[in-house]
Image 1 (tube, helix red, strand yellow):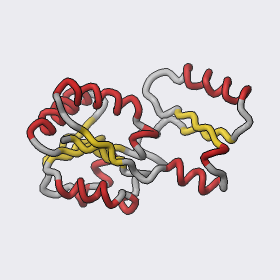
Image 2 (cartoon, rainbow, N blue to C red; image 1 turned 90 degrees about the vertical axis):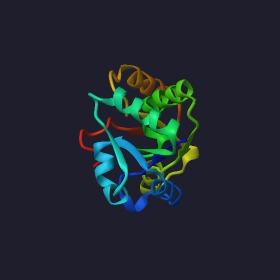
Image 3 (cartoon, rainbow, N blue to C red; image 1 turned 180 degrees about the horizontal axis):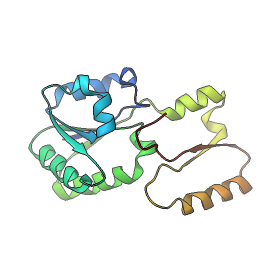
Image 4 (spheres, rainbow, N blue to C red; image 1 turned 180 degrees about the vertical axis):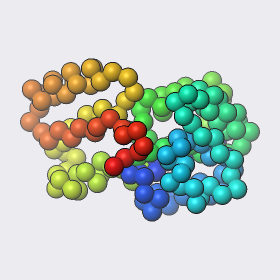
Length: 166
């Protein structure tokens, strides 16, 4: 079984209770270095698979092999349903190929934090994520369309910073 754990805004104090319980129960934990470093206090004695842009494919295969043989966890910045759609797509495809069951454990979403800071609710908002690798052209065109058509608050999630959120 593979557990995909969203770690929220990156503060170890904001990981969900469910996410923390799963993290404590598994022997193998994978993730990007910036996430693993922030949560290192929970990783003592665990086998770590550290992703980088150069080794992502190999790291994902190693993670899948680990999940075939037992429970493993993948720590992801933010909420997996908000800020990691490209990676989640790759992982769910690999889970199908390897026959691995998975569970997504949402994190404390930075979306909720933004709405709270702005004093607006989800019903009156549209979110556009620029949190993707590669060209932003399609997303920016989408943003232009939304700006022309809707009369709602538009919250734009910026591209990720090289060393995690600020």
